[in-house]
Amino acid sequence: MKKKLPFLCPGCSAELKVQSLCCTHCDTVVSGTFSLPILSQLSEEEQLFILDFVKSSGSLKLMAEKLKLSYPSVRNRLDDIINQLENLQKPE
Amino acid sequence: MLWEKLFNPFLRIAGFRSLWIGLVVLILVSGLAVFCHCHFDGALDVHIGAKSPTWFYFAENFIAWISLFVTLYVAGRFSSKSKIRVVDVAGTVVLARWPMIFVVLAAFIIKDTPITAHDITAPLIVFGFISMVFSISMIALLYNAYSVSCNVKGSRATLSFIIAIIVAETISKLIIINLQKII
Image (cartoon, rainbow over all chains, first blue to last red):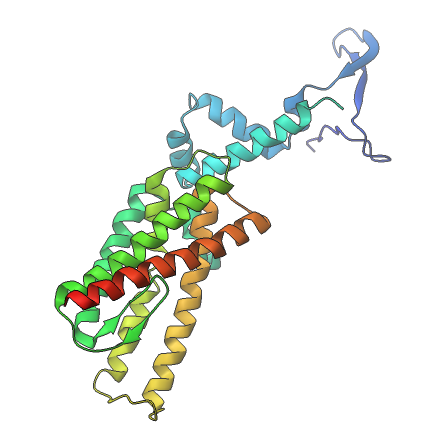
């Protein structure tokens, strides 16, 4: 089963932080408080879209052909993601 | 899926592809209108009227399309933050008028029926019903065309769309009335 990385607290909906990282090779554990990268706070579908967009050299036309969608549909999806990223980047 | 294809084909078709498909339909509708004297004398109008020169039926349809496309493009520029392409608005708006093909075909039902203010005949009722259903579906398609091509959603989209189609209707009506005076 593929696990989904949670980024919001299920109790109070606040942003979650990473407290520990471990090496599965030697069992070393690093503890601290680390912020999640902004991109990881997007949904899996949105992350895949960004990945495809980079792989298409940022060409919306290529993306539209690949996804079998119209150019404005792809542009709208990208604009929605940009809007979401801008909201996530806003200082609290 | 079928619902999406019928009422929001613009998720998959836009730009030059929708423009040429829409223009073919527009020319076909205008050509058929010549034979049944069906007048698209406004952005959202359809009437059965007097015989007019052939070019006039084509002019009416082109005026209806251009007035809608220009007003929706301007509305989109004001209400959207996205970069809007003219060809997307022009293409999706002309394709949104495809249900008019059913209206013009329905007009053949009452082609030879004399119509006066007192005649409410069965063919007239059928034509009225068909034209109403497909005119409403055209408005729904126009809204989706505007929403997709200009990336506007929610109440902002609804309000700007209503204003734009009222302006388009007024402009197209004025142009067509003045054009009628020439012929």
